[in-house]
Length: 396
Ligand code: ADP
Image 1 (spheres, rainbow, N blue to C red):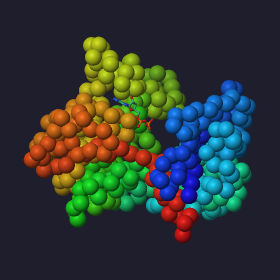
Image 2: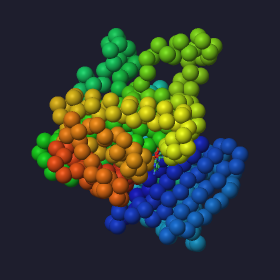
Image 3: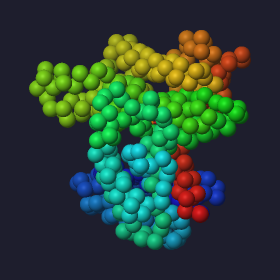
Image 4: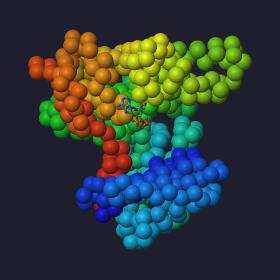
């Protein structure tokens, strides 16, 4: 049984076709520059084969048509007909407080995703375009929406409310929602199983270009670092993370900029990039540090400090810690940074074994003997989690 997973952006569309019987990706690809001159599709299949195509791709429906053509193509395809796709799972950024779990897409769900556009103005419209494009080209195939926010809906009010007049929460639903929920759910779910304890307190550090932490008690999210939007929390590749909101007004006045322009700076020009004045990519920043670049040293120091503070805060919020988990691009791949983040956390019971940490590939317990908190690397797989939800909901 094959599930197609779609992640639609405003001018891009990523896809993976997953064979759920073997739990393997049989083809994946990316359409770029939709609606912009120079549109193209990159389709990967088999053991590393690649097929590229440049064409006029004015909208997401045309993009989906190209994707399906690539999937069934006699030469580059992996299936013989569209009927071999059982269902489509869509990544949707913002489900507001309406969605606590993944759901089959119908008219009402579509309207609810549309109603969340003010909360996710960049992503939700694109996610909807992806859903509508799929319906146009495969009208009888069931579609499922998997929300980035859903896993965090178990947070209690004390964690999701901001200290502002309640009127604005009631009128505009201003609160913490959190993101990367599919990853936090998948990884914390694995962590609960691996820990094998009835009662569990887990911190998941999803450290990629965008980064977020979550505190998970007995498998349920009780707090997370991103907020109303993905801007809040730890310092990221290009996002500032949390700061005094008065900075926005101050910058507007001093630099004669609009709020939109300042938010753009905080989202796209800050974080590692802003502080290092060098790069948003952690690998470049580390290279800079090796070469003695002072900006990179400072950026790395701010990055690790902001994450360390959240680890401490969440351990305190949960009244203790059983497992600390690292995932995503940085969390999975870099032992030096895992060492940097865990050094000095012995007071919490976190102690990492150097050899295990440096040799970790895939899922691995990297705790030192005698550590009272287990530290693990657990690779995330958001597409597989989306495909699993899609299969479960459409099989019923
Ligand atoms: P996203 O999905 O948020 O775009 P990823 O989870 O793919 O991001 O992570 C991308 C980030 O991971 C980049 O900053 C990249 O530099 C970093 N990264 C990947 N591999 C390594 C590594 N070996 N060492 C340090 N950083 C890495």
